[in-house]
Image 1 (cartoon, rainbow, N blue to C red):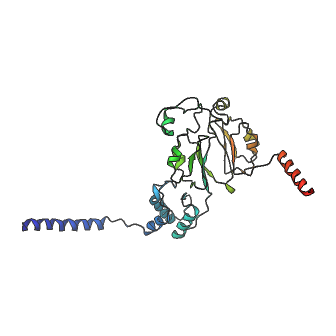
Image 2 (tube, rainbow, N blue to C red; image 1 turned 60 degrees about the vertical axis):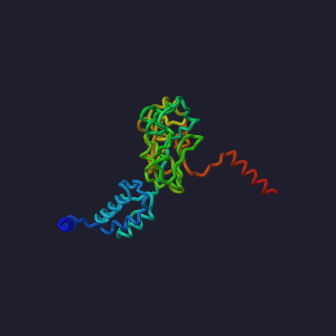
Length: 292
């Protein structure tokens, strides 16, 4: 019995010595800044920064700081506030990034794009897209199953029961890009939020020729080129029968909105302009009040 105890004790002692030597020889020293940066990051692990979680982002930030610049790195959830704290922690300067927001580039509501068939299968956009065009004649538009809603960790997207389309709450959206990745038809795009939240974009991704696109959806872009001709800033291009507005060049004059024959161009958060009739009525009422 005593011999067995001595043998086991000797083996344990030898094993502990070996483990100690190995741990010292192959030890990897972790930069203490990694832990500090990780504590500052929000811990959402959404992947919107392009790295596998906040730990991956922290590692990239520390390496970028050692290289001398944090340019191109951004935490969409924490925003400028968190990035400013990280920059101060690492002793770096960081440029202000343009606030971004997810935009749904489809206006194929039930009214504009009536259902032609009934899909009876797995109720996900990915499954429906892989086996059919969906329940309408448009093979490019929103499928309405809500994969983007399920992907959003911040409850920033919801399906409108009347239109059947996803809607983004810009106050909750962190521009993490999870909804962009979840959409199998790539109708969701991250765009500049814009001053006062104002944006102008084409709410269509249909690349069919005009007549076919219009037949499938009354609000489809038909690639007529009127918007491109109207734009004085070269912000609009037509490719594959589809118009696209470059938010980096767009001055938001809204002239393209006025000339679009199908209403495929959307202007968000602009003040509602009064018609001439409404203006006349207002002026008449003001004149009556002054006379009284």
